Each structure stands twice: as C-alpha cells, then as structure tokens.
Image (tube, rainbow, N blue to C red; front, side, top):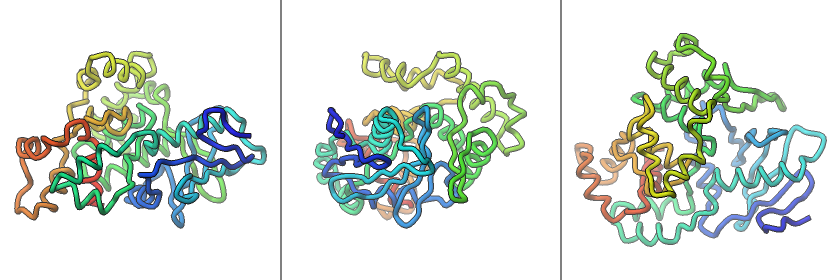
Length: 310
C-alpha cells in the first residue's frame, strides 16, 4: 500500500525512500566509510547496514542505492514484516539521517561563486550532511572527540557502546544501539575511566546523560529555543563540558541548523590549509573573513571541506 504522505512505498519487508535530485548515495557511502572502526553501522559492497533506534522493534536495515530517485531499504533479521508504524518511523529516521528534506539549491549557488568551495562541491556534489538524529549520541560523540584525533575517538566510542549499548546479532555481526542516557546517568566517573576516558570527559558524559534523563535537555527544547528567537548554542554552552565547538558540532549534525559553524575545528583549518596550498593553517579570524559569503550555509560549507580530508 502507498503512504498518504507520499514519502515511502510499502513492499512487505522492503520499502523505497524517494530522494531529492541533489543526493548521491555513493558519495554518502564514501563519507561513511572513513573509519573501519565505526561500530554504529557497517558498509559492505556499497551497501549500508544499521540497527536503527525506532521502536518497538529496533530493526536492522539494509540500505542500498535504488537508482537516482529512491533508496532501497530492506528489513533484516526478522521473520515477520515490520509494522506499518515501524516502516513510517524508519523512513523518518533515514530522511533525517541523510538530510533528504533540505533544499540544497541555494547552497550550491553560493558555493559555485566561492573560489574555495567550488572545486570541493563539484567533486562531492550530492553529498549531504550525514547526521546523528539522537541528541544524546550526538553530544557523546562530540564530547568524546574533544582534543583527540579521530582514530582514537572511534576507539573510545566503540568501547563505550560495546560496554553500555544494546546488541542484536545477525549473520555473525553485532548491531548496536547507542547507550541510553538513563543507563549512563546512573554511572560514576570511575566507571568510564578504564575505557581510557579522562575523568573530565567521564563527568561531562554523565552530566549530559542526567540532563536528558531528567527531562531538562532535549532536541525539541533546543529546536524550540532556536526557532523561538533564542539560541540553541547559548543553551548548550551553559552545560558543563560543552564549549562553542561542541555546541556547533551538535547543532550541525543533530539539530540541522545550517548556520552552525564550528569555526575552531582543527579539521576545518587543515582542509583550508590543504586547499589553499599555504604553509600554515588559517587563524579563526581569517576563516571568518573568507567565510563571509557562506552566511546561512556554514554547516554545509564545513562538512564539504571536512570531506577533503578523508
């Protein structure tokens, strides 16, 4: 049966998710393959496998490029087809995960007029910001990644997930759900230190978990703050352990605020240094000057520049 909202087509254990014209699945897979130590999804022969956090079934899905107009999604590891509500929730999750509902036409128009962005956008056109729809997962990933290299950040995340997450086995692979804030809120900092988390990061992770578990912080609250004339960034940086970089990373990957700009990001600085062929990394002030035309699309500009590094 067809969905009345027109955003998916049921086929028992399969469904088709329509995609916009400016979406390239191969580029998405390329970005998602940047670490062999990723524990929240698998890439195999150009296909994505992931257990997605939509209940009550928490299905494992196989996502492949179904042509230029749709993604092909198949539910795995279950004898019975998922319910219609799970189908609908899975589509919503996938659309948000790959940012399929954002019109990138204005971004590409801006980028093609920008000397720094133009070659990168032309090279990776169709790549969209691969998000982290769950706020707690986004906060944890940003906190874990503070002031360490990406490879070690993936190692720490894997240890954290494998100790406190929930696992389903299918065909010899473990498919993980990210630890819940309720689980982490009940820990002491010492519980995380043997994972090689610093004492401060352990405290920050547990503090964020407690805020979410107690209902004092949520994705909806932050979005309402932003759309109501307030500032999600100010709300986030008021939390212990969250500075401007962490806040903007979360705003970019989870809240989908296109003006989010982690301008202090080392990867951004390295990408600009590489593209400009200079001997030193640019200063924050220099990046602010060269990004003057990016207004409203700083998040996408940053994401594309990051892509150069992988």
